[in-house]
Image (cartoon, rainbow, N blue to C red; front, side, top):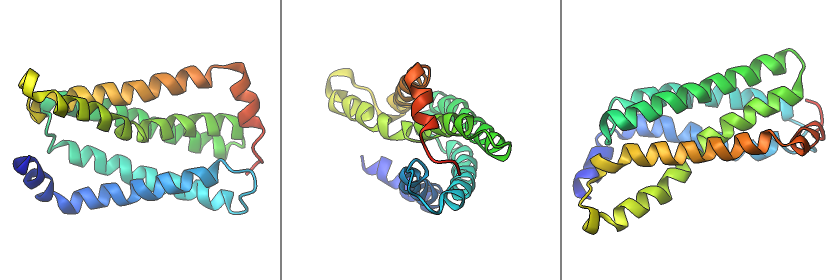
Length: 174
């Protein structure tokens, strides 16, 4: 654990440039989905900007992946999907299609929150490491794939429900 802490401490600047915009993104998301938000256009633009910073820094952080190529592949795949979803949301918003813009933003949010889902998975790996003899370098990548995949799967299933379209249409236009 000491080595793991030292590893992250050695990349503190990049970690902060990644985590602080991600935190602001997560804090702004509820206002994006709120009907009464008077500043919804400003919030939407802020999410696009913050998301771009989070995406670019995620690529940079993956060069120092604890879980090696497995973690890097998960970051590359899901981060690319995150930026693609964010870009689609932006294009649909510019074209005036708020329902499709919100669908794609919802995908982006789910992917971004996938990192939170990896934490309990990592916790299970840490808790069972005495039995499995796996080190963080052995399970970080697997935990990333599990956490991000779970979020994407759940949100895709939810977005494909007919009732979801009505819900996304019920938000006030931006």
